[in-house]
Each structure stands twice: as C-alpha cells, then as structure tokens.
Image (cartoon, rainbow, N blue to C red; front, side):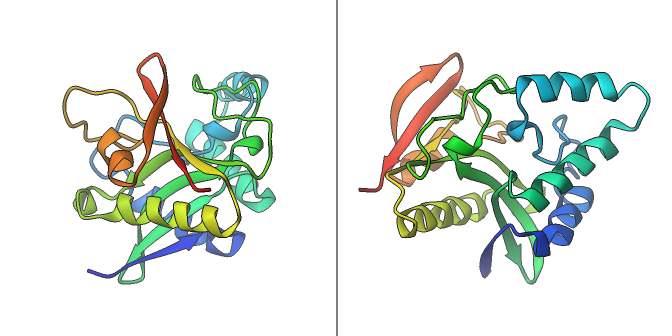
Length: 196
C-alpha cells in the first residue's frame, strides 16, 4: 500500500471535507468534528456553544473549519491511498494556538518557529493500524526539520489499553518516532522530539 502525505492547503479543502464527511467517522465515533476546536480561544468556543442553539452545530463547525483553512489557522496533513484521503493529522506552530484555549490542553507556546504541536489524528477505520498515523507523524517531523523548528511536541492520553478513537495518537506512536516524555497534564502526557 502506497501512502501519500500532503500538507493541507485551501486547494485541498474539498479532500479534507470529503474525508471528514464521508469516511472519518464511519465507526460511530463519539467525537465527530472537523478538528476546528483546537484553534479556538476560550471566548470563541463559549460563543460558538451559545450560537449553536438555533442552527445545526455540525454545519457551524464545518463553516468554522472552512474559514480556518482559508486563513491558515487550521494546519496539518492529509494521508492518501489510491488518491482518496484516508487520514488526517492536525499539526501547527505552537505559537499559532490560542494562549487561552477552549480545549483543556494548552498547545500554545509563545515563541514562533520553535515547536510544532501535533494535536490530533483521525484515520479511516479500515486503515487504522496500517501505518497511516506513523506516515503522518514522520511527515510532520520531516517538514519541521526542513523549516528549522527545534522540536515537535505531541499530547497523547495515558490509557491502560488500546482505544479505538484515540485522536491524540497512542504513546507508543510517539515513542517509535523518538519522542520522550517531558511532563504530564492530568491524563495527557506531553512528549517531545528534539530536532536540533
């Protein structure tokens, strides 16, 4: 199986939405989204929750993700097999995340061009365990090196057994790629791979 990884651009937004609308959550994942929440500040997230009373929340989330792709706020990589998008990784400069996030993990770090945060993976169910997440993570690392970043940081959740909807990626994924634990935040393990 040949895996192709492409950095998300506005030109690839149709592939992105095709992936999330048609393949990403076909196993009834309880976490359906468009990966837009990580880029929202606490104020933006709270306003979003207020605004969903009268409209379709899924459509609202999709519209927010579309705006984030167009402005470059939502960054990451799509994985393709046979020309079809089968995986996604949300990865961005840590300085690009909100300093007061809506989400409960602080991905933000104030120094731009220093660290890339890997915050989410979503893999089509039938492609899980086939190296898609590894290929995505390796591409993040490769591009971070090329762009002179000092490190890549991941945020896996501590689990006692395999969890099918492990959107942060399992600890062993990061360990295989050379990451080491630097701290804990509740159940989240902060892992880092130094590049310099």
